[in-house]
Amino acid sequence: MPETYRLCDKKNTALTALIKRVALAKRVAVVTGAGISVNCGIPDFRSSEGIFQQIQAAHGDTLASGRDLFDASVVFRSAATADIFYRWMTHLRRKCAEAQPGVVHRFIRQLADRGTLLRSYTQNIDGLERKAGLTVWDPYAPKSSDDHVPWQSAQSVPLHGSMDRLTCHLCSSSLHFPEHSRGAIVAGDECPDCRLRSDARQADGRRSLPTGKLRPTVVLYEEPHPHCEDIAKIIAHDTRALGSRRAPPASTLHGSSRVTKPREPQNVIMVFGTTLKVPGCRQLVRQLANASPASTITVFINNEPVCGKSWDGIVDYQVIGDVDAWCLRIQRQWSMQPKITRWAKTRKTTTPEVRAPTQKKPQRMTANKENADTAPAAASSNEKCQTSSRKRKCLDVCDDGLLPTRRSVRIAERESLDLYRQSSPHAIYICI
Image 1: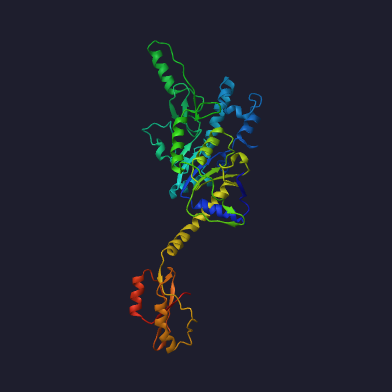
Image 2: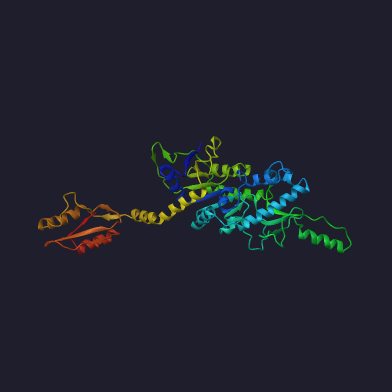
């Protein structure tokens, strides 16, 4: 069973170490569900107050369950159920138009700005990723339009389509889905392209053609995905980017009672706000995790535990808590990284130093000629010692005794140290 932590446990050192590892990741793949948009005002599907329950309460006499409204084998059986579907799609489009990106959407955008986002796969159809500033792959967008983004440069891939466009189920032509239904085309209207072709035939004295109805470009249950081959190509590309194979984990985040630090930045797969009940999403997470090297970790974040023993070897860590709070803790860790990075670089750049002699340090008030005589010997005996780039305080000792001045000296290279010795032969460097 994956290692499970609760985000509210701020004293958990293993959880803190995991957050640091995720913040230092060099490549991140993200899989999101409806849970990341709940705080934006868009209800999820499966909760007690979700869309399925709302549909069941409003149309229980027509539909056996709320899920049936998103089942292609049920919803288009009769004109009544199809009409309910079109009205709910227009209502959802209005809710999506009013919503604004949340913490997780901005977090994913920040990953992209930092250059660590490999890809964001979303099951959501609300289009908030585009509002957050991510480039979204839209297979329905014409190549001549500004919305067309090649999959190679797309930062976000909607797995189940989006509410941004309408398509005709008969001629497959697509139109922009207006954000407001007043005085505009809505779901369930006749396709204008089909209507033009039918009117042109009738004007020539020929029989009319059937006209299709417009529906959002979303993929329903029990419906073949129209772009499954393209999505499979994207997933295969990202799988190769993460690694060609997955070795058995050499060690976990914490062994026995002590926490170990990663030797290098790792790849991370983060799964947000989903119950992993959709078969396609489960397969996506398994494919990304199984194809990743041993240096890649998979982290699942959700309000309630989902991953059991069946996810052993796939999901490494399960964090129970609010997805927004998790992102905020990662961002807080990022805010500390510039200082940590500068400190690490200065510690890494080491130069030779002359350290204090092992004998008793010279005192300020007792410096005399004897101390001045022993100073050159002490400096030469410690010539090969290592130094860091931290500031050193220098005490100059001359024949007349200890000078009353004290100044800070930063030495970057051996050459500058030698030059300083030539100009001031009686110098003792003491690490403070």
